Amino acid sequence: MAAASFLRTMYLTFFCKPAHVRQVFRLMRRCQPQNIVELGLVDVNRTVDLIQLAQRFAGPSPAIRYTGIDLFDARPQSSPAITLKQTHQRLSSSGAKIQLVPGDAYSALQRTANALGKADLLLISQEQSAAQMELAWFFVPRILSDSAIVLWEQPPRDHGHASWRRVTAAEVETLATQATPSRKRAA
Image 1 (cartoon, rainbow, N blue to C red):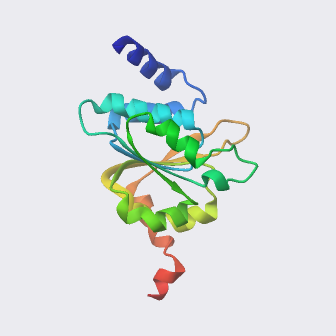
Image 2: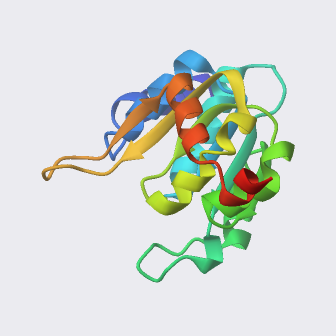
Image 3: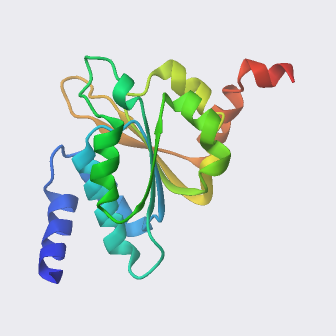
C-alpha cells in the first residue's frame, strides 16, 4: 500500500494533467494544509486527489477539513455539470470532514465566513466571476489562518496554459479593503 501511495503522490506532483495543477500538489507537500477551502470546483476528481494528498501528508493528525463553494446545480449550461448530491457522495468517501456550500463566492462567504474556521489553503478557480470576487474578498481574511496560502487560478494567456498566482497576505488585505460591501459602508 505504501508503494502505491508513493507512486500516486509522484504522479500527482510531477505528471498529472493539466500541468498547472501540479503546482498545487507540490505546494501541499510543503505546507501540509489541514483546512482547505475551494471557491469553484473545477473537477471533482481533482478535489478527491487534493484531499487524499492532504491526508497523506497530514499523518496521524486530525482529519482534513474541506469546504467547497460552488454554484453546483445552478451552474450555467456552458459549465460542466456538478451536482451537490453527487459531489457530496464522492467527497464523503474520502474520510475528510466535507462541507459543501452552494452559491456564488460572495453570497456563500457572506453566509458562512464566520463558521468556516481558519483555512490553511484557499484555492480560487478561474471560473469565479470578477464581479463576485470583488465583493467576496471582503470576507476572505475572516477565513484564513495566519500562515494561510491563497492561490488564484489565472486563465490561459496567448494560447498558453492556466497557472496559479499566489496572493500575498498584504494583497488579501488590500483586496478586502477595496471590497467593502455597500451595506457595510452605510453602517
